[in-house]
Length: 164
Length: 293
Ligand code: FES
Ligand code: FES
Image 1 (spheres, chains in turn yellow, orange):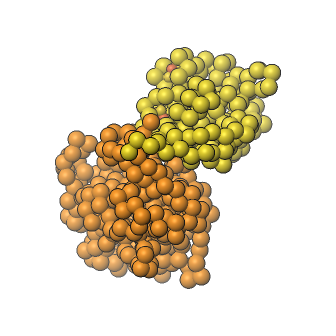
Image 2: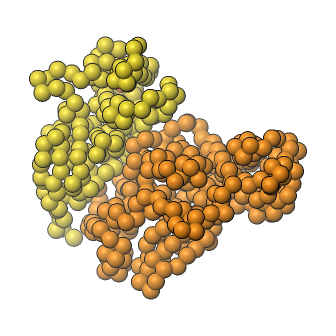
Image 3: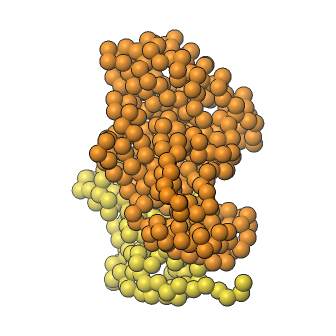
């Protein structure tokens, strides 16, 4: 069968209402990168293992590579592009990644920041072990994870109003 | 792009059943965390899919008048781990759901999909065996209720008939009232890994708190499908709590298992892990029940 099947969807991407004609074969990664030029959403393993393609859907982290683009209909999607302030200054979490040296090549960074942001938004205190579990869906080939952990720990604690 | 020929989306159970009649060759897709990866792998060329993700009536957990806990098959693992009814009555199931994959996978994956795939390694499956879960399947000619044990036909094969849809996972009051469960997953990595072996125990103590009253022992990856240990369960009903009982019960349980050698682990290793897991899980159940080994 050569007739491709498309569906018209409406969703919100980084607080902006958008619509698109979506190929039913497309993943959400392909939609965000191809149609909306959001190349912060990385094409990694493509099978849900590495977390590089993570986006927030209605506030929760999902691997966009194993999420059909048509399922985005009616959803609220956030990529890392939606976190910085309107004037371009970094969010506290992003700044913590910079300050703690949590970024080397940067390939894992957008996904990790989004998962971490979802934890901050949830506003629940997490033990170190719980926090590591929450970040376990991301692979980083560069940093050895410790600085990433420190950055998220700091940003989460600060947002919960603790010192240090 | 996924190699998908056609995708049909259902918003209601009736629509899904109608789509199944119209497209007999189509596969159901819920979360997609298994199916999409198979498609990516080239295992389902030119796939025709019926997406049931949009059927909101099949999502969420409720408590029925007779104390049965009803779980909608589209409930995600994350939702299971956070649900108040589950946390209060079936903590073991919340724990098992929390062992799946990673947070992102737990958001997309559904408990119904976990079962319908028929994988022996599915983290929630062995616990649902230990909880004597019943499955509600709706088809063109009505609804049938099936014991989860009868649902598994063989490795990767389950008894979802053509024109049928899993519409509920039911756990009776006798499986949670005064019961305490524990699930142990043994895997090489603590995240994003498939179980080498899974063991789920559900225990109710006698009124005096010193004997086993009701025991359920279930395993995943100890055979082609998840399985129970009916002889051990029967033999140890009434047994006094203690180190000897715990050890003997674990030894007896593994005599009812038949794991295989695979690249992930040998049969001998799986049997060893199964015995230790059964022992540890049983002791933990006793502890949670307020008893002493
Ligand atoms: S690219 Fe999606 S998880 Fe790796
Ligand atoms: S910084 Fe390179 S993969 Fe994480």
